[in-house]
Image 1 (tube, rainbow, N blue to C red):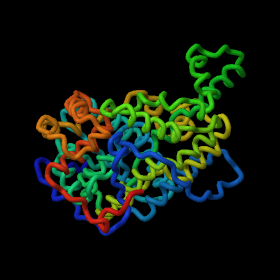
Image 2 (image 1 turned 90 degrees about the vertical axis):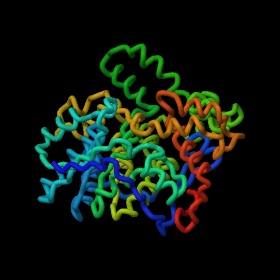
Image 3 (image 1 turned 90 degrees about the horizontal axis):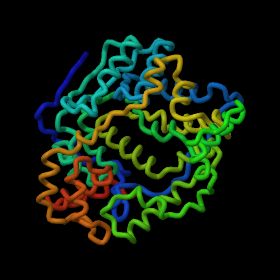
Length: 413
C-alpha cells in the first residue's frame, strides 16, 4: 500500500486556468446553495435491439475507456457506489488483460462518522486487491483550509464548495484517468413510480399492499403540476426571508416535476442543471492537474441504458438495482447495506467557527439572507450543505478579494 499524508504542509493552490466554464453562483443560487433550472439533454445514441444487460454493458464500456489509455484510478470510499464501480472496473481490466485500476481512498483519522475502513477492507479482500493508495487528511478538507482558500482566490466562488479542495487529491492523481461515483445517488435511487412497482408486485403475488405503500401511493399518483410550491419550503434553509423562500420553492418545484413512468423519470436526470454544473466544475479543476475524470453513473449512455432496461415500471429501489447490476461481483451484504458515512465534520473546524463568531455580515445579500440566522447555522453542531458556499463568499469579502478575471473562471452556466 502506498500511503501519503499532507500533514501540515501548506497548499499553494492551483493557478487561475485559461479555460472558460467555471460557474460562480450568485443571488438566489448563492443564498440557497443550489443551482436551479434544466438543460437540454445530450443527443441520444443507439442502444441496440436487446434490452437485457444493457446497463451493465454501458457501464463496462465507459469504464473501459478509462482503463485502456490508463493509468487508471477509482475514487474508493467503501460506500456502495464506489465499491460497485471498483468491482466492475477490476472485472473489465482482468477480462481485457489491462492493468488493474488503483483504488484511491481518503481517510480522516479521528472522525468516526466518516470511517468506512471495515467496508473498504471487506471489498478489497473480496476483489483480491493488495495495492491501493491511501491519503490521510486532517484539516485539508476544511471550508476555509489552506487548499480551499487558495482555490477561492484563484478561481472565485465555485459550486459546490468542495471543488476548492479537489487539489488535495488531484495533486496525487496527476496524469491519470480517474473514475468517480458522481451521479450515483440520483441514478440508483427510488423514483415517483417506484411505489407503483411495489403495488404491481404485491397484487401479482396475491398480497395486500403494506400500510407504508398505501401511505406513499397518493403522493406518487398526484400529478407534479398540482403539488403546491409551499410543499418544498422545508427543503430550504432557515435564513431565507419568506418571500425569498417562496421564490426558491417555486423554482425547485418546477425542477422536481417528473413522469410517473420510471424510464422517463430516469432520463429526466440528464436535464438537471445542478448536475451539469457540478460535473463541469469538477472536470475543469481536474484538467488543472492533468487528470481526466470519468463519471459512469452520470454518463448519458448509462442513464439512457438504465431507463430503457427498467422500462415503464423500473425497479424495487436502490438495492434491487445494485443486485441486478453487480450481484456477480460483490457480496450481498455490501450491495444491500443501508449505512452511509458522514463527512460534515471534515469540513467544519475551529477556523470556520472562529470566522463565524467574528464575521461582520459582509459578503452576503441581506435582502436574501438573514445574517444572524446564518451565523447560528454556521455555529451549529451540523451546519447544512447550503451554508458552505455562503461561508466562502463571506470569507472572500472579508479579505477584499476581487473576482478572478472572466478569462480565468468563465461565465455563468
